[in-house]
Image (cartoon, rainbow, N blue to C red):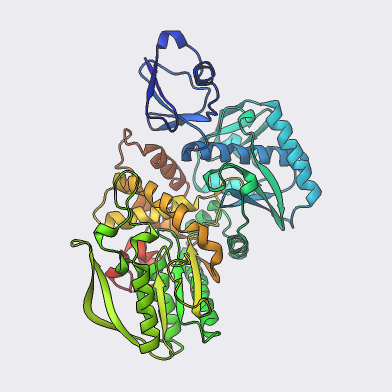
Length: 554
Protein backbone atom coordinates (compact mmCIF):
# COMPACT_ATOMS: atom_id res chain seq x y z
CA UNK A 1 0.00 0.00 0.00
CA UNK A 2 0.98 3.60 -0.60
CA UNK A 3 -0.13 5.95 2.17
CA UNK A 4 -0.66 9.61 1.37
CA UNK A 5 -1.33 12.46 3.79
CA UNK A 6 -2.73 15.70 2.41
CA UNK A 7 -1.89 19.14 3.85
CA UNK A 8 -4.12 20.37 6.66
CA UNK A 9 -5.93 17.00 6.81
CA UNK A 10 -6.01 14.46 9.62
CA UNK A 11 -6.81 11.41 7.50
CA UNK A 12 -4.32 9.27 5.59
CA UNK A 13 -5.37 7.86 2.23
CA UNK A 14 -4.27 4.31 1.37
CA UNK A 15 -3.76 3.47 -2.29
CA UNK A 16 -3.01 0.03 -3.71
CA UNK A 17 0.55 -0.02 -5.00
CA UNK A 18 -0.19 -2.27 -7.95
CA UNK A 19 -2.76 0.20 -9.32
CA UNK A 20 -0.15 2.97 -9.43
CA UNK A 21 2.97 1.07 -10.36
CA UNK A 22 5.49 3.28 -12.22
CA UNK A 23 3.25 6.35 -11.88
CA UNK A 24 4.70 9.60 -10.60
CA UNK A 25 3.42 11.35 -7.55
CA UNK A 26 2.05 14.08 -9.81
CA UNK A 27 -0.02 11.53 -11.76
CA UNK A 28 -1.36 10.05 -8.55
CA UNK A 29 -2.32 13.47 -7.22
CA UNK A 30 -4.02 14.41 -10.51
CA UNK A 31 -6.08 11.22 -10.44
CA UNK A 32 -7.05 11.23 -6.78
CA UNK A 33 -6.84 14.74 -5.38
CA UNK A 34 -7.99 17.17 -8.06
CA UNK A 35 -8.10 20.78 -6.93
CA UNK A 36 -5.18 20.38 -4.51
CA UNK A 37 -2.25 22.63 -5.49
CA UNK A 38 0.46 20.25 -4.36
CA UNK A 39 4.10 21.34 -4.77
CA UNK A 40 6.02 18.36 -3.46
CA UNK A 41 6.17 15.88 -0.61
CA UNK A 42 8.12 14.68 2.41
CA UNK A 43 9.18 11.05 2.50
CA UNK A 44 11.32 9.51 5.26
CA UNK A 45 12.65 12.91 6.33
CA UNK A 46 13.51 13.94 2.78
CA UNK A 47 11.84 16.45 0.45
CA UNK A 48 10.91 15.04 -2.98
CA UNK A 49 9.26 16.69 -5.96
CA UNK A 50 6.27 15.40 -7.88
CA UNK A 51 8.41 13.33 -10.27
CA UNK A 52 8.96 10.84 -7.47
CA UNK A 53 7.56 7.35 -8.16
CA UNK A 54 6.06 5.98 -4.92
CA UNK A 55 7.02 2.53 -3.69
CA UNK A 56 5.03 0.01 -1.71
CA UNK A 57 5.02 0.93 1.98
CA UNK A 58 5.73 4.62 1.45
CA UNK A 59 4.13 7.14 3.79
CA UNK A 60 4.05 10.34 1.77
CA UNK A 61 3.17 13.72 3.25
CA UNK A 62 2.14 16.11 0.49
CA UNK A 63 2.94 19.80 0.91
CA UNK A 64 1.44 22.97 -0.54
CA UNK A 65 2.16 26.65 -0.11
CA UNK A 66 0.40 26.67 3.28
CA UNK A 67 3.15 24.42 4.63
CA UNK A 68 6.61 25.83 5.46
CA UNK A 69 8.29 23.17 3.30
CA UNK A 70 5.90 23.84 0.43
CA UNK A 71 6.44 27.59 0.73
CA UNK A 72 10.20 27.07 0.57
CA UNK A 73 9.76 24.92 -2.57
CA UNK A 74 7.68 27.71 -4.08
CA UNK A 75 10.06 30.58 -3.27
CA UNK A 76 13.15 28.57 -4.28
CA UNK A 77 11.60 27.84 -7.67
CA UNK A 78 10.41 31.43 -8.08
CA UNK A 79 13.97 32.67 -7.53
CA UNK A 80 15.32 30.18 -10.07
CA UNK A 81 12.77 31.30 -12.67
CA UNK A 82 13.69 34.94 -12.00
CA UNK A 83 17.38 34.15 -12.47
CA UNK A 84 16.70 32.26 -15.72
CA UNK A 85 14.66 35.16 -17.13
CA UNK A 86 17.22 37.78 -16.13
CA UNK A 87 20.17 35.79 -17.51
CA UNK A 88 18.43 35.40 -20.86
CA UNK A 89 17.78 39.14 -21.16
CA UNK A 90 20.86 40.52 -19.36
CA UNK A 91 23.54 37.79 -19.45
CA UNK A 92 26.28 39.99 -17.97
CA UNK A 93 24.26 41.42 -15.09
CA UNK A 94 25.15 40.35 -11.53
CA UNK A 95 22.11 40.48 -9.30
CA UNK A 96 22.05 39.36 -5.68
CA UNK A 97 19.13 37.66 -3.94
CA UNK A 98 19.68 39.90 -0.96
CA UNK A 99 16.95 39.26 1.61
CA UNK A 100 13.49 38.02 2.46
CA UNK A 101 11.47 40.92 3.90
CA UNK A 102 8.00 39.78 4.90
CA UNK A 103 6.58 37.96 1.89
CA UNK A 104 8.97 39.61 -0.55
CA UNK A 105 12.41 38.79 -1.89
CA UNK A 106 14.62 41.85 -2.21
CA UNK A 107 17.02 41.76 -5.17
CA UNK A 108 19.88 44.19 -5.76
CA UNK A 109 21.88 44.71 -8.93
CA UNK A 110 25.61 44.90 -8.24
CA UNK A 111 26.55 47.60 -10.75
CA UNK A 112 24.02 50.28 -9.95
CA UNK A 113 20.35 49.36 -10.01
CA UNK A 114 17.36 48.34 -12.09
CA UNK A 115 15.41 50.40 -14.58
CA UNK A 116 11.64 50.18 -14.58
CA UNK A 117 11.59 48.94 -18.17
CA UNK A 118 14.11 46.20 -17.28
CA UNK A 119 11.76 44.90 -14.61
CA UNK A 120 8.83 44.83 -17.02
CA UNK A 121 10.92 42.82 -19.49
CA UNK A 122 12.04 40.34 -16.81
CA UNK A 123 8.44 39.95 -15.65
CA UNK A 124 7.27 39.16 -19.19
CA UNK A 125 10.05 36.59 -19.66
CA UNK A 126 9.20 34.95 -16.30
CA UNK A 127 5.60 34.61 -17.42
CA UNK A 128 6.79 32.99 -20.66
CA UNK A 129 8.91 30.50 -18.70
CA UNK A 130 5.98 29.65 -16.45
CA UNK A 131 3.56 29.34 -19.38
CA UNK A 132 6.03 27.00 -21.14
CA UNK A 133 5.78 24.68 -18.13
CA UNK A 134 9.40 23.56 -18.49
CA UNK A 135 10.62 20.53 -16.58
CA UNK A 136 12.99 21.30 -13.71
CA UNK A 137 15.58 18.56 -13.48
CA UNK A 138 18.72 17.93 -11.45
CA UNK A 139 22.01 16.74 -12.93
CA UNK A 140 25.20 15.72 -11.17
CA UNK A 141 28.31 17.82 -11.93
CA UNK A 142 31.87 17.12 -10.79
CA UNK A 143 34.00 19.88 -9.29
CA UNK A 144 35.96 20.50 -12.50
CA UNK A 145 32.76 20.76 -14.53
CA UNK A 146 31.31 23.29 -12.09
CA UNK A 147 34.48 25.39 -12.08
CA UNK A 148 34.29 25.53 -15.87
CA UNK A 149 30.54 26.27 -15.92
CA UNK A 150 30.84 29.10 -13.36
CA UNK A 151 34.22 30.50 -14.45
CA UNK A 152 32.78 34.02 -14.71
CA UNK A 153 31.08 33.90 -11.29
CA UNK A 154 33.72 34.38 -8.54
CA UNK A 155 31.16 33.99 -5.75
CA UNK A 156 30.52 30.39 -6.80
CA UNK A 157 34.17 29.63 -7.64
CA UNK A 158 35.29 30.71 -4.15
CA UNK A 159 32.54 28.65 -2.53
CA UNK A 160 33.33 25.49 -4.52
CA UNK A 161 37.07 25.79 -3.80
CA UNK A 162 36.99 26.81 -0.13
CA UNK A 163 34.20 24.40 0.86
CA UNK A 164 35.98 21.74 -1.26
CA UNK A 165 32.78 20.67 -3.01
CA UNK A 166 33.67 17.50 -4.94
CA UNK A 167 30.36 17.24 -6.78
CA UNK A 168 26.85 18.65 -6.66
CA UNK A 169 23.48 18.24 -8.28
CA UNK A 170 22.71 21.37 -10.30
CA UNK A 171 19.28 22.31 -11.62
CA UNK A 172 18.37 22.55 -15.29
CA UNK A 173 15.40 24.41 -16.81
CA UNK A 174 15.48 23.95 -20.57
CA UNK A 175 19.00 25.17 -21.50
CA UNK A 176 19.56 27.12 -18.29
CA UNK A 177 21.71 25.49 -15.55
CA UNK A 178 22.57 26.86 -12.09
CA UNK A 179 23.26 25.70 -8.53
CA UNK A 180 20.62 26.09 -5.88
CA UNK A 181 20.87 25.15 -2.20
CA UNK A 182 17.50 23.55 -1.66
CA UNK A 183 14.79 21.65 -3.46
CA UNK A 184 12.70 22.95 -6.36
CA UNK A 185 9.33 21.93 -7.80
CA UNK A 186 9.37 19.61 -10.84
CA UNK A 187 8.05 22.10 -13.44
CA UNK A 188 7.80 25.84 -13.88
CA UNK A 189 4.03 25.87 -14.40
CA UNK A 190 3.45 25.29 -10.67
CA UNK A 191 4.66 28.83 -9.90
CA UNK A 192 1.55 30.75 -10.85
CA UNK A 193 1.39 33.67 -8.43
CA UNK A 194 3.99 36.41 -7.90
CA UNK A 195 4.54 40.09 -8.54
CA UNK A 196 7.64 42.08 -9.50
CA UNK A 197 7.87 45.56 -8.04
CA UNK A 198 10.34 48.38 -8.66
CA UNK A 199 12.07 49.16 -5.36
CA UNK A 200 15.04 51.47 -5.90
CA UNK A 201 17.86 50.62 -6.11
CA UNK A 202 16.61 47.04 -6.48
CA UNK A 203 13.36 45.20 -6.95
CA UNK A 204 10.97 43.10 -4.91
CA UNK A 205 9.63 39.69 -5.86
CA UNK A 206 6.34 39.40 -3.98
CA UNK A 207 4.99 35.93 -3.28
CA UNK A 208 1.84 34.60 -1.60
CA UNK A 209 2.03 33.44 2.01
CA UNK A 210 -0.03 33.37 5.19
CA UNK A 211 1.23 36.86 6.15
CA UNK A 212 -0.54 38.44 3.15
CA UNK A 213 -3.44 35.98 3.14
CA UNK A 214 -1.92 34.31 0.05
CA UNK A 215 -2.54 37.39 -2.06
CA UNK A 216 0.41 39.54 -3.13
CA UNK A 217 -1.93 42.53 -3.44
CA UNK A 218 -2.10 42.58 0.36
CA UNK A 219 1.67 42.84 0.82
CA UNK A 220 2.76 45.89 2.85
CA UNK A 221 6.18 47.48 2.39
CA UNK A 222 8.67 47.37 5.27
CA UNK A 223 11.00 50.32 4.56
CA UNK A 224 12.90 50.18 7.88
CA UNK A 225 14.01 46.59 7.36
CA UNK A 226 14.77 47.29 3.72
CA UNK A 227 17.08 50.14 4.74
CA UNK A 228 18.85 47.93 7.27
CA UNK A 229 19.48 45.24 4.67
CA UNK A 230 20.78 47.85 2.22
CA UNK A 231 23.15 49.33 4.84
CA UNK A 232 24.37 45.91 5.94
CA UNK A 233 25.01 44.91 2.34
CA UNK A 234 27.21 47.99 1.94
CA UNK A 235 29.16 47.07 5.10
CA UNK A 236 29.71 43.50 3.89
CA UNK A 237 30.95 44.82 0.54
CA UNK A 238 33.22 47.33 2.28
CA UNK A 239 35.02 44.66 4.32
CA UNK A 240 35.04 42.13 1.46
CA UNK A 241 32.77 39.46 2.98
CA UNK A 242 29.64 39.33 0.84
CA UNK A 243 29.58 35.56 0.38
CA UNK A 244 30.45 32.40 2.29
CA UNK A 245 33.45 31.86 0.01
CA UNK A 246 34.82 35.27 1.10
CA UNK A 247 34.50 34.31 4.78
CA UNK A 248 36.08 30.92 4.17
CA UNK A 249 39.04 32.58 2.44
CA UNK A 250 39.65 34.87 5.42
CA UNK A 251 39.58 31.89 7.78
CA UNK A 252 42.00 29.94 5.57
CA UNK A 253 44.28 33.00 5.33
CA UNK A 254 44.27 33.46 9.13
CA UNK A 255 42.58 36.87 8.83
CA UNK A 256 39.67 35.96 11.09
CA UNK A 257 40.81 37.78 14.27
CA UNK A 258 40.72 41.11 12.46
CA UNK A 259 37.34 40.26 10.92
CA UNK A 260 35.86 39.48 14.35
CA UNK A 261 37.14 42.75 15.79
CA UNK A 262 35.77 44.78 12.87
CA UNK A 263 32.40 42.99 13.07
CA UNK A 264 32.14 43.59 16.83
CA UNK A 265 33.18 47.23 16.43
CA UNK A 266 30.46 47.70 13.81
CA UNK A 267 27.91 46.19 16.23
CA UNK A 268 29.06 48.52 19.02
CA UNK A 269 28.68 51.48 16.66
CA UNK A 270 24.98 50.60 16.34
CA UNK A 271 24.57 50.58 20.12
CA UNK A 272 26.36 53.93 20.40
CA UNK A 273 24.06 55.34 17.71
CA UNK A 274 21.03 54.18 19.72
CA UNK A 275 22.43 55.82 22.87
CA UNK A 276 23.11 59.04 20.95
CA UNK A 277 19.54 59.23 19.63
CA UNK A 278 18.14 58.62 23.11
CA UNK A 279 20.40 61.21 24.74
CA UNK A 280 19.62 63.74 22.00
CA UNK A 281 15.99 63.90 23.17
CA UNK A 282 15.84 64.40 26.97
CA UNK A 283 12.12 63.61 27.20
CA UNK A 284 12.79 59.99 26.14
CA UNK A 285 12.49 58.29 29.53
CA UNK A 286 11.36 54.83 28.37
CA UNK A 287 13.33 52.66 25.95
CA UNK A 288 11.36 49.74 24.54
CA UNK A 289 13.40 46.89 23.03
CA UNK A 290 11.64 44.19 21.04
CA UNK A 291 12.60 41.51 18.57
CA UNK A 292 11.98 37.87 17.73
CA UNK A 293 13.51 34.94 19.58
CA UNK A 294 17.31 34.84 19.72
CA UNK A 295 17.74 38.30 18.26
CA UNK A 296 19.97 39.27 21.19
CA UNK A 297 17.55 41.46 23.16
CA UNK A 298 19.15 40.78 26.54
CA UNK A 299 22.73 41.52 25.54
CA UNK A 300 21.67 44.58 23.55
CA UNK A 301 19.85 45.95 26.58
CA UNK A 302 22.97 45.47 28.73
CA UNK A 303 25.28 47.04 26.13
CA UNK A 304 22.90 49.98 25.79
CA UNK A 305 22.97 50.35 29.56
CA UNK A 306 26.77 50.63 29.47
CA UNK A 307 26.69 53.09 26.55
CA UNK A 308 24.30 55.36 28.46
CA UNK A 309 26.24 55.02 31.71
CA UNK A 310 29.31 56.36 29.91
CA UNK A 311 27.36 59.62 29.59
CA UNK A 312 26.33 59.60 33.25
CA UNK A 313 22.84 58.24 32.61
CA UNK A 314 21.80 55.33 34.80
CA UNK A 315 19.11 52.86 33.76
CA UNK A 316 16.48 50.64 35.30
CA UNK A 317 15.88 47.41 33.36
CA UNK A 318 12.44 45.83 33.49
CA UNK A 319 11.49 42.55 31.85
CA UNK A 320 7.93 41.97 30.78
CA UNK A 321 8.38 38.35 31.93
CA UNK A 322 8.18 39.61 35.53
CA UNK A 323 4.63 40.81 34.84
CA UNK A 324 2.89 37.61 33.74
CA UNK A 325 -0.69 37.36 34.95
CA UNK A 326 -1.50 34.68 37.52
CA UNK A 327 -1.66 31.21 36.01
CA UNK A 328 -5.44 30.91 36.16
CA UNK A 329 -5.74 34.12 34.10
CA UNK A 330 -3.28 33.02 31.43
CA UNK A 331 -4.91 32.69 27.99
CA UNK A 332 -4.97 29.28 26.36
CA UNK A 333 -4.42 28.03 22.85
CA UNK A 334 -7.13 26.08 21.02
CA UNK A 335 -5.45 22.83 22.14
CA UNK A 336 -5.77 23.82 25.81
CA UNK A 337 -2.10 24.68 26.40
CA UNK A 338 -1.19 27.97 28.09
CA UNK A 339 -0.27 30.68 25.60
CA UNK A 340 2.64 32.46 27.29
CA UNK A 341 3.49 34.17 23.98
CA UNK A 342 0.22 36.15 24.00
CA UNK A 343 0.29 39.76 25.19
CA UNK A 344 -2.76 38.86 27.27
CA UNK A 345 -0.41 36.71 29.37
CA UNK A 346 1.13 40.00 30.60
CA UNK A 347 -0.46 42.15 33.31
CA UNK A 348 -0.33 45.25 31.14
CA UNK A 349 -2.17 47.52 33.60
CA UNK A 350 0.16 46.68 36.50
CA UNK A 351 3.22 47.19 34.31
CA UNK A 352 2.00 50.63 33.14
CA UNK A 353 1.03 51.62 36.67
CA UNK A 354 4.44 50.67 38.07
CA UNK A 355 6.31 52.55 35.34
CA UNK A 356 4.26 55.72 35.91
CA UNK A 357 4.89 55.50 39.67
CA UNK A 358 8.59 55.01 39.01
CA UNK A 359 8.72 58.11 36.80
CA UNK A 360 6.63 60.26 39.16
CA UNK A 361 7.99 59.17 42.54
CA UNK A 362 11.36 57.59 41.67
CA UNK A 363 10.63 54.31 43.41
CA UNK A 364 8.49 51.20 42.98
CA UNK A 365 8.46 47.62 44.24
CA UNK A 366 10.46 45.16 42.13
CA UNK A 367 8.36 42.29 40.81
CA UNK A 368 9.20 38.79 39.62
CA UNK A 369 7.14 35.85 38.43
CA UNK A 370 7.21 32.60 40.37
CA UNK A 371 6.79 29.97 37.67
CA UNK A 372 6.33 27.19 40.23
CA UNK A 373 3.44 28.98 41.97
CA UNK A 374 2.18 30.65 38.81
CA UNK A 375 1.99 34.05 40.49
CA UNK A 376 3.61 37.46 40.24
CA UNK A 377 5.27 38.39 43.55
CA UNK A 378 7.24 41.25 45.10
CA UNK A 379 10.95 40.50 45.55
CA UNK A 380 11.38 42.75 48.58
CA UNK A 381 13.64 45.03 46.56
CA UNK A 382 12.79 48.31 44.89
CA UNK A 383 13.53 49.99 41.57
CA UNK A 384 15.03 53.48 42.00
CA UNK A 385 14.94 56.07 39.23
CA UNK A 386 16.84 59.36 39.30
CA UNK A 387 15.74 62.52 37.51
CA UNK A 388 17.96 61.84 34.50
CA UNK A 389 17.73 58.05 34.57
CA UNK A 390 16.09 55.96 31.85
CA UNK A 391 13.85 52.89 31.99
CA UNK A 392 14.66 50.04 29.62
CA UNK A 393 11.83 47.58 28.96
CA UNK A 394 12.79 44.44 27.03
CA UNK A 395 10.49 41.74 25.71
CA UNK A 396 8.80 40.38 22.61
CA UNK A 397 5.76 42.63 23.14
CA UNK A 398 7.69 45.84 23.79
CA UNK A 399 6.61 47.50 20.52
CA UNK A 400 2.99 46.41 20.76
CA UNK A 401 1.05 49.63 21.55
CA UNK A 402 -1.13 47.70 23.99
CA UNK A 403 1.82 46.96 26.28
CA UNK A 404 2.51 50.63 27.11
CA UNK A 405 -0.77 52.25 26.09
CA UNK A 406 -1.09 54.21 29.37
CA UNK A 407 2.33 55.82 28.91
CA UNK A 408 2.87 58.99 26.80
CA UNK A 409 4.20 58.27 23.32
CA UNK A 410 6.39 61.36 23.59
CA UNK A 411 8.45 59.66 26.31
CA UNK A 412 9.14 56.42 24.41
CA UNK A 413 12.07 55.39 22.23
CA UNK A 414 11.43 52.14 20.39
CA UNK A 415 14.15 49.75 19.21
CA UNK A 416 13.55 46.68 17.07
CA UNK A 417 16.19 43.95 16.86
CA UNK A 418 16.57 41.10 14.42
CA UNK A 419 19.42 38.83 13.38
CA UNK A 420 19.15 39.74 9.71
CA UNK A 421 21.68 37.56 7.93
CA UNK A 422 23.14 39.69 5.16
CA UNK A 423 25.97 37.45 3.93
CA UNK A 424 24.88 35.22 1.05
CA UNK A 425 26.02 31.71 0.21
CA UNK A 426 26.46 33.03 -3.33
CA UNK A 427 24.63 35.62 -5.43
CA UNK A 428 21.69 33.27 -6.03
CA UNK A 429 21.49 31.56 -2.62
CA UNK A 430 20.88 33.48 0.55
CA UNK A 431 21.28 32.43 4.16
CA UNK A 432 17.99 32.13 6.00
CA UNK A 433 17.68 34.57 8.90
CA UNK A 434 15.19 32.21 10.53
CA UNK A 435 17.62 29.28 10.31
CA UNK A 436 20.44 31.32 11.85
CA UNK A 437 18.19 32.43 14.73
CA UNK A 438 17.18 28.82 15.32
CA UNK A 439 20.83 27.73 15.50
CA UNK A 440 21.46 30.45 18.08
CA UNK A 441 18.46 29.33 20.13
CA UNK A 442 19.21 25.60 19.84
CA UNK A 443 22.82 25.99 21.01
CA UNK A 444 21.72 28.17 23.92
CA UNK A 445 18.79 25.99 25.01
CA UNK A 446 20.75 22.75 25.02
CA UNK A 447 23.53 24.46 26.97
CA UNK A 448 21.47 26.33 29.55
CA UNK A 449 18.06 24.68 29.75
CA UNK A 450 18.84 21.00 29.44
CA UNK A 451 16.79 20.57 26.28
CA UNK A 452 17.58 18.26 23.42
CA UNK A 453 17.56 19.23 19.76
CA UNK A 454 14.23 17.50 19.04
CA UNK A 455 12.41 19.48 21.73
CA UNK A 456 14.00 22.71 20.45
CA UNK A 457 12.82 21.89 16.93
CA UNK A 458 9.30 21.12 18.16
CA UNK A 459 9.10 24.31 20.21
CA UNK A 460 10.43 26.42 17.34
CA UNK A 461 7.17 25.97 15.44
CA UNK A 462 5.24 27.57 18.32
CA UNK A 463 7.85 30.30 18.70
CA UNK A 464 7.60 31.17 15.00
CA UNK A 465 3.80 31.23 15.15
CA UNK A 466 3.98 33.60 18.13
CA UNK A 467 6.42 35.89 16.31
CA UNK A 468 4.18 36.11 13.26
CA UNK A 469 1.29 37.13 15.51
CA UNK A 470 2.88 39.21 18.25
CA UNK A 471 6.26 40.54 17.04
CA UNK A 472 6.58 41.08 13.29
CA UNK A 473 3.39 43.17 12.86
CA UNK A 474 4.93 45.94 15.02
CA UNK A 475 8.51 46.05 13.71
CA UNK A 476 7.93 49.08 11.48
CA UNK A 477 6.82 51.10 14.54
CA UNK A 478 10.42 51.26 15.78
CA UNK A 479 12.37 54.52 15.94
CA UNK A 480 15.52 52.50 15.29
CA UNK A 481 16.09 49.04 13.81
CA UNK A 482 19.31 47.22 14.70
CA UNK A 483 20.65 44.14 12.97
CA UNK A 484 22.35 41.93 15.57
CA UNK A 485 23.74 39.37 13.13
CA UNK A 486 27.53 39.08 13.14
CA UNK A 487 29.10 38.38 9.79
CA UNK A 488 31.40 35.68 11.21
CA UNK A 489 28.98 34.00 13.62
CA UNK A 490 27.99 30.87 11.70
CA UNK A 491 31.66 29.85 11.46
CA UNK A 492 31.76 29.96 15.29
CA UNK A 493 28.38 28.34 15.84
CA UNK A 494 29.06 25.53 13.34
CA UNK A 495 30.96 23.22 15.70
CA UNK A 496 28.42 23.74 18.50
CA UNK A 497 25.44 23.13 16.23
CA UNK A 498 26.78 20.26 14.13
CA UNK A 499 27.40 17.93 17.05
CA UNK A 500 23.84 18.55 18.24
CA UNK A 501 22.22 18.10 14.83
CA UNK A 502 24.12 14.84 14.31
CA UNK A 503 22.20 13.39 17.26
CA UNK A 504 18.80 13.72 15.54
CA UNK A 505 17.60 10.37 14.09
CA UNK A 506 16.19 10.06 10.58
CA UNK A 507 12.74 9.16 11.88
CA UNK A 508 12.46 12.46 13.75
CA UNK A 509 9.56 14.52 12.26
CA UNK A 510 11.92 17.50 11.99
CA UNK A 511 14.65 15.68 10.08
CA UNK A 512 13.97 17.70 6.91
CA UNK A 513 15.00 20.91 8.72
CA UNK A 514 17.97 19.13 10.31
CA UNK A 515 19.20 18.00 6.89
CA UNK A 516 18.89 21.52 5.47
CA UNK A 517 20.78 23.02 8.42
CA UNK A 518 23.58 20.46 8.16
CA UNK A 519 23.91 21.05 4.42
CA UNK A 520 24.13 24.79 5.00
CA UNK A 521 26.71 24.46 7.78
CA UNK A 522 28.82 22.13 5.67
CA UNK A 523 29.62 25.06 3.34
CA UNK A 524 31.39 26.97 6.14
CA UNK A 525 34.90 26.48 7.41
CA UNK A 526 34.67 26.36 11.18
CA UNK A 527 36.37 28.85 13.49
CA UNK A 528 37.41 26.53 16.28
CA UNK A 529 38.68 29.09 18.81
CA UNK A 530 35.75 30.41 20.86
CA UNK A 531 38.24 32.54 22.77
CA UNK A 532 38.45 34.84 19.74
CA UNK A 533 34.89 35.99 20.48
CA UNK A 534 34.87 38.94 22.94
CA UNK A 535 33.03 38.29 26.21
CA UNK A 536 30.83 41.31 25.47
CA UNK A 537 29.63 39.87 22.15
CA UNK A 538 25.98 39.11 21.49
CA UNK A 539 27.21 35.71 20.33
CA UNK A 540 28.25 34.95 23.91
CA UNK A 541 24.57 35.02 24.88
CA UNK A 542 24.26 31.76 22.94
CA UNK A 543 27.62 29.96 23.14
CA UNK A 544 28.27 31.02 26.76
CA UNK A 545 30.90 33.12 28.50
CA UNK A 546 29.13 36.49 28.51
CA UNK A 547 30.59 39.14 30.79
CA UNK A 548 27.06 40.19 31.61
CA UNK A 549 26.58 37.08 33.75
CA UNK A 550 24.88 33.70 33.54
CA UNK A 551 21.46 35.15 34.28
CA UNK A 552 21.59 36.93 30.93
CA UNK A 553 21.99 33.64 29.06
CA UNK A 554 18.32 32.75 29.57
